[in-house]
Each structure stands twice: as C-alpha cells, then as structure tokens.
Length: 328
Image (cartoon, rainbow, N blue to C red; front, side):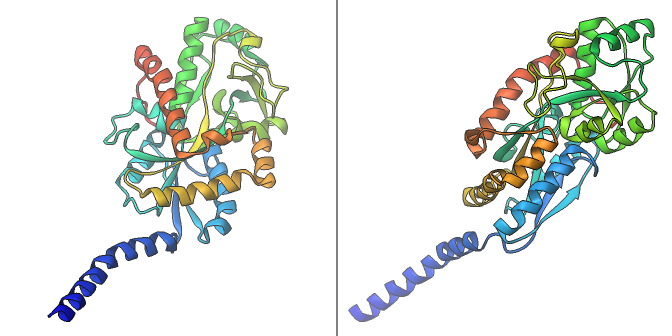
C-alpha cells in the first residue's frame, strides 16, 4: 500500500506540474510567430516611419518579424480599440503617442486610456513643428499672426490629430485670430495636400515634416517646445517668434493589451531598449528630429509614469477649452 501511495502521489505531482511547465515553456518560446504592430495612422506619417524603423531593428532581436498594420481614422482611436480588444498574448501591440494615449480623450471611447493598456516603454520625446506650404506669405509666427489678422479666417490648418487641433485653438486664443480647421485622417494625406498647396498650415511631430523642411519643400514656422531642439537648433521656438506659451507635446511608446503577461512585456521591452541603443537607430531618430527617451523612461513603469503626468497636464486643458472630435 505504501508503495502504491508513493506512486500515486508522484503521478499527481507530475500532473500538477504540467500546467506550470507548459506556461514556462510558452514564455520561453515567445515569440513563436510574427507580432502585429498596429500603427494608428495611415502610411507616410511620423508614427508609421518610426514604427518601421523599430520593427526592422527588433526583428533579429526577437527572432520574429513585427508586421506593420496601419489602422487610420478618428485620431488613432479606432486602432487603439483594436488593440484593447486583442488577445493579451503579446502578438498585438501598438506604437502610441500623445494623440492616441492622451489626446484621444476627445473621442467617445469604449476603453480606458489610463488602465486599458500595458505600457512597454517610452521610445522618444518628439518636438512638434508648425509648418506651412513653401509659398505661404508668412515665414515665422510673428508674420503668420500679422497675416491672419489681416486675413481673418482664411488660414487653413490641417486637423489630423488632437494635438493639431489643440495647437490651433491655443494659437487662436493667444493671438485673437481665427483659423479654418480642415479634417484629415493622418499626417500622410496632410503632407500630400500641403506639398500640393491645398492647405496652408500643419502641426506635426518633427519626424513627419523635418525632411521636407530641410529639403526646402515646406517652411518651418516654429518649434512648439519651450526650448530649441538639439537635433534642429536652427528652428526657433514659439516664445522666440512672438507667441509665448504655444507649446505642444509629442512622444512615442509601445503599449500592449491589458493583461499581457509581465514576462512577455519584459521580452518586448528588452528588444526595444537594445534597438534604441543601436547607433544606427539613434542616427535615424536624429535625422527625424526625435530625442531618444532617457533610459529610466524606457521601462514599463517609466512610460506609465510619463503618460500619467501627461494626462494630468493636458486633460484639464482639453476639457476647459471644450475641444471635441471632428471627422478625421
């Protein structure tokens, strides 16, 4: 009987260990198939460009490709809804930013921006630029404001994101001018129309427009940051060109669906951190006008704290200004 009892207990212990061993094996095997990286805007914009840079460098680090899927519309909120509903198994993540994970509050969302996602890590801090078509009469903010006062309501500002809309409203409030807001679904279509002369002004992350500015195809009106950027020191700030306090934030980070296991989050984060340390990636970021995030903010906790601070700063401003969604 004792022998049978020991055999039974041994068999029971073996059976009980199977789920745990299976879980460990699954975590060690991750990823075993391609990972879908949701880009919440159409191809051609800054989010798409940065997503592809990171996907290319992270592929050999993870041993699987990051397959880009562009899901545009409603300022990125459609894409985030897709991520929020995805299976939290590490095979669907998104590249988020201010417009999606802070400014998205202007939309009627069926998910929670603060608690509905698992932060993976902050990648960059992104100066925002106000740019114009190359033949627009103004060359900086002071001459832009003068032109707008002489031509009330005639300036056409692309409204492709919540950040663009916020910036336009701030400009009107700070200067007593008026703009026409033209809705777009993403930075790519705006660039096409801006280069074609069909719209006058755009506010976007430097990554989306800096190459065109440096090529002379667009004009930089101002850097909407409190201080000049190290990667584009030639572009003056709003403070320096006549509209003090016209600031707009920008950043990129990776997020996963709520409930994604911590070991999988750590695996993606490790690949992200290693990619950001690559001199070639850092050089690409510099070309695009992006400042790589400090190492301590590249962690899941670092991104969570950063997003929380951004929400605390911007949500009261958005609500007080009564900013709401337009068709995008």
